[in-house]
Image (cartoon, rainbow, N blue to C red; front, top):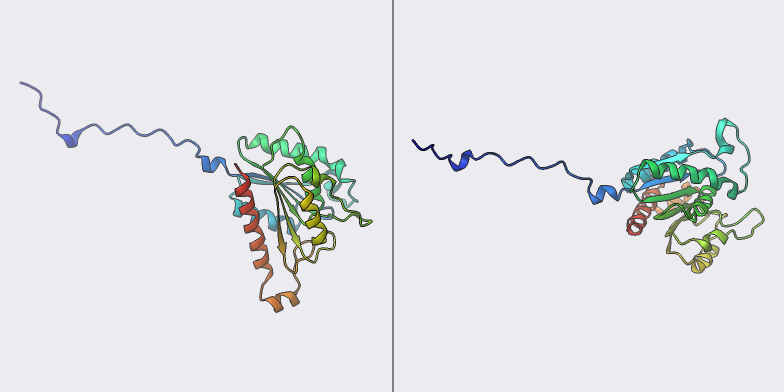
Length: 230
């Protein structure tokens, strides 16, 4: 007797699909190396707050913070010249890249850390997608413009500056930006000081609070980084 035909609805189920590969979107999640300023370590409230905001806004695979050697050990010492910090900073960056291969690299820094980030971005042995300068200290101690490293940059660079920041007069920054050869943008925190803090008087006058200005700044950073990752 001929075997009965299997009904159509009794066909063997198709094989299970292979596990999904890492998507292009997840591969585009950046790794951010975030350097502190001259006077406060990576564990400061300000650094911790901005680290969390940036990680969420960018969906970063990691935001790496670290302390420069002069800040280590809990002793507050004056920082050396910025170029003396490049090797340590570059070592941290290379370790982050090794831990997250294939992810876009973003360098971000607060004040002095942004200057050193710009120096590190010019290194030949790393590929940086964007540099974010939070309160770039354009004016030196004697008032001279510290723009030489900015004019050498080829990496897309964004400045976030308070318009009441005495270390970076916006007219001087605008003059410098026009001379820069890399793509660059500026986001101004209206009423903000060197750390983007706005006074209570400004908040009362404008109806804008600290959370509002920080949220707008982080949104601008995220948009710039997305446009810089190719």
